[in-house]
Image 1: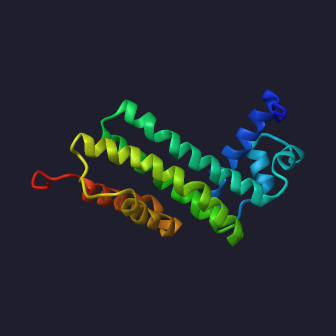
Image 2: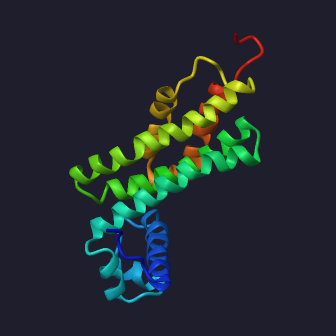
Length: 186
């Protein structure tokens, strides 16, 4: 039996709630559900109908962010050369790291483990697609693997919010520079 389809307005409300929470989580120490509802233009009842608990909402914000990051990789490759697509994807990774930091600071360790399980494989697959394209066109070093890059970009979620704008993009530029194939690389 297939699950019932959501009404269009319910789907739109859910999307607005997720977007509002995503925007607020990077700006506040604690996500307040009444502010999410207000920003999304929905009532408290609508918010709680979609997300019975604060953790449910935070988990969905995180999943949504991961899904957007994963979908972006092939889209960027279709529109840009591989190294440029990777650089643009890294900008999205910086935003993802901010959301991850906000979500992970607000949920239990069990939820953190579940969310990490949801993200590592798909993000690794998206990154592999980008790295393979860069290796194929000769712009990315042949000795780089996904795990190397995941370890490096993992540090983004440890950057303090106060310096995230400045520091995250600089760190990503350093990582990109290290991934770039040089003329003397084999």
